[in-house]
Amino acid sequence: MSPAARRLLLAGATRRRFLSTDAASSASASSQLPRGKRWDAVVIGGGHNGLVAAAYLARAGRSIAVLERRGVLGGAAVSESDLVPGFRFSRCSYLLSLLRPAILRDLELERHGLKLLPRSPSSFTPCLDGRYLLLGPDAELNYSEISKFSKKDANAYPRYEEQLEKFCKLMDFVIDSAPPELRQDFHASMVDRMKDRVDKSAFWGNLLRHVMQQGQKNMVEFFDLLLSPASKILNCWFESEVLKATLATDAVIGTMAGVNTPGSGYVLLHHVMGETGGQRGVWAYVQGGMGSVSSAISKAALEAGVQIVTNAEVSQVMVNETTGKVEGVALADGTEVHSPVVLSNATPYKTFVDLVPVNVLPEDFLSAIKTADYSSATTKINVAVDRLPQFHCCKDMSPEGGPEHMGTIHIGSESMEEINVAYREAAGGVSSKRPVIEMTIPSVLDKTISPPGQHVINLFIQYTPYKLSEDSWQDSNVRKSFAERCFSLIDEYAPGFSSSVVGYDMLTPPDLEREFGLTGGNIFHGAMGLDSLFLMRPANGWSDYRTPVKGLYLCGSGAHPGGGVMGAPGRNAASVVLEDLKAK
Image 1 (cartoon, rainbow, N blue to C red):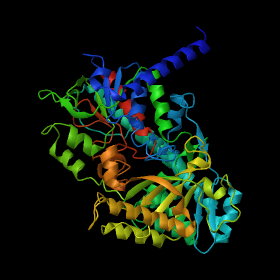
Image 2: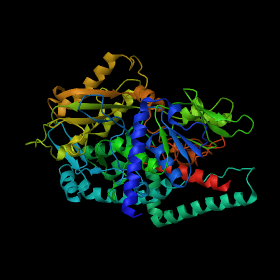
Image 3: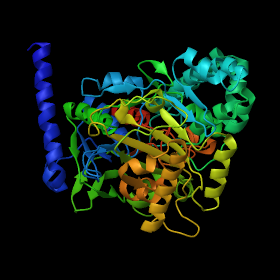
């Protein structure tokens, strides 16, 4: 058979299996699974990390079942069309950059329909005094724009970007590696234990080589970035408040932290370490919305032979009381799915507190999971509008959209102090009076998600506490009032925005928890502070995707290296599982 014919056959099989998966969304889980089959591994959750893990395991010849609670795949990387008629929303995540290049290549995601739409310019900050700041991949544009506020900053900005890029090269190795845990496994053979120590030594040796390449001065600055508040880092580099505030939003986005919070500098790095088309720090829209990312990964998984089942809520991880080993999972409808390996794409709290039977986990481990920081300050409002917003600081707007509409539009963050005030209000249990809003308009580049002449607008908003001190997010008046507060703030920069709203979908922290299983509404499956990263994620001693339950692994954002549509936790976890299966 020719390669071309084989590709056509595989594509046809993929379409058939993918259609059957969609059609099965209304069927019971038991009717979608082969009766009595024992799988090599079962994945809890059809989010992007779970799908990545499943695809890699199946490509290695293993039989894999993915069990997704909702009727649609993707977890937080999902597109949904039934919220406002005619519009397609990326309900949670809304931009792509962090997805590991190796995953794009290995799973051939472009062949499976993934189309990225790079943004240039990538950032627009309007000011109430009539000025504005555009930033993007064009160095000349950046110099010209920053010079409007500070010549000194315009000269410093390329050096700032260069330094962050150097740090990102160091982080690439860490992100793509399983952390080197050195637990003592008394059941392993002496040979296996020696091999394990050699593997761990190899990790530290490679890391040391990367560190040496950075040089002492760069490493001191790297640790300064990791440990310092974003405000300190940005104040050292720049003098313009608008530029500092624009960059500072990356350091606090998705976190219950302010610009003065120690360690917020790392989150700044986390949001610039990605790439699009080989270019660092460039974020892209995805044609069809973020669900297209999950769709492409699921097609790769299906092509490799993965069985994907939707509307299959896992109620418990089955553990043998005598051996302490995993035996599979039980579904909410009573179906038992048997496997000696289970990978959980759920949050650590959901996995270990809700799904693992009581009295199975060590008390200190369970305590660490329960007391971890799952706080959230994020609300997402997906808005349908009948026209593009017209910012008063921009003249002669094009009906098709201008540079100001292409990238992330920063509303309510003209200074770091504004961001800090908004954070302090939320820390006191009150949603910010002047929220920090990141607005994106993907329909300017993606014509598939809205009717002609109308647009989809994503509002990623901070700060909104999970639990309000006086009101409740369950009160429809509270929800409406906050949405209108956000729209009114946008009106200050783009008069008439409120009147352009056709409809909207609002997700507060409790909504994110209820609908998407994000504990506390935290989009990263847990805080990204220094005490919750690398060897400490999700708990000290258990950072290598294995867990105290033999055969149970963590493969979601609650594992190293953390949150974002990255795929690294899923890919790394799959490699660890394959390593363990090979050792048996």
